[in-house]
Structure formats: structure tokens, C-alpha cells
Length: 111
Image (cartoon, rainbow, N blue to C red; front, top):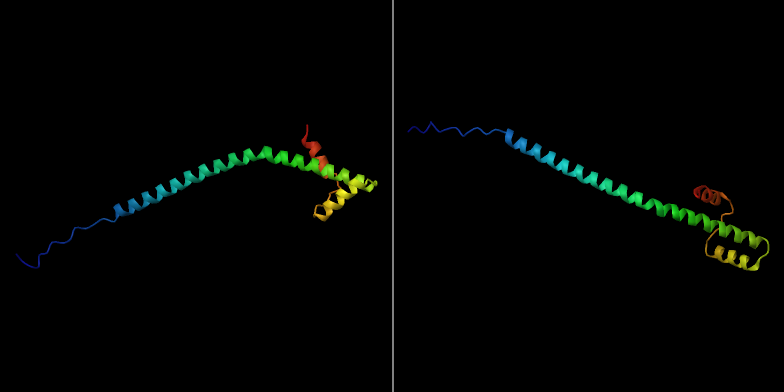
């Protein structure tokens, strides 16, 4: 046996590792896409469930603005209890919006 005749190592193909990496990346992207799609759908459902509560809170806000406006009108007409209430609200940092914008939006919301 001759020492110069060492068998050459078998040539390895780089194709199989490259294919495995590509498949792994595609699987990861597919998983993330499906997960994000499911989360988007869940957020859409949650947003839709909040809509009635939001409308109800806007209606209640309009009613409270109307009550506060009418109380301020009574205070302007000389009602001492209404004036005391308006003063107390002002001391607590609550301002009364005298415009009728809120009331008109509440009337438009009620069919």
C-alpha cells in the first residue's frame, strides 16, 4: 500500500442544509402569519364588543352635560342651590360647557 494514495473525502453537497434552512424559515414565517392573523381577528371582535358601551357612554355624557348646563342656567337666574352646586363643581375643577353641541349630538343619536 502506497502512502500517497489516500482516499479523497466524500464531497458533501451544500444543497441539503440550504433546503432545511429555507424550509425552517418558511415554517416560521407561516406560523407567525397565522398567529398575527388570529390576533387581528381577536382585536376586531373586541373592538366591535366595545362599540355599544362607547355609544352608551357618549349618550350619558350628553345627558350629564345637559343637566350641568341647565343647572348653570338656574344659577344664573338666581337659584341659590344651583349656584352653590356650580361653585362646588368649579372648585373641584369641573367646568360646565354651555354650548349645545353635546345635546344636539345626543338627539341625533336617538332615533
